[in-house]
Image (tube, rainbow, N blue to C red; front, side, top):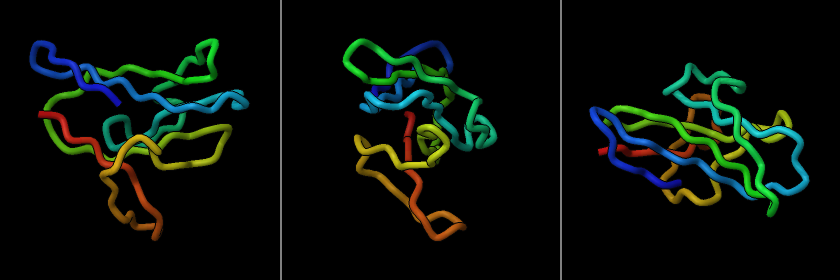
Length: 93
């Protein structure tokens, strides 16, 4: 994930390598945990990317790859959620 400065908020790029996936979304507390709230696009190398403008703060999220909820393998910050699994943690400053 990459964070870029913008007025009042930051542009965050979420990316995951999933060459065989048919659909990838990003769900988190920044979009009400809606699996279709932020849809990623696949490039020719099989990397899916989605960009979102978010204000400063701490957010939890997961990728939704063909209906399976998974943590971001590129994010080392994680926390336990109410379901007993992990969420990835994004900190925007």
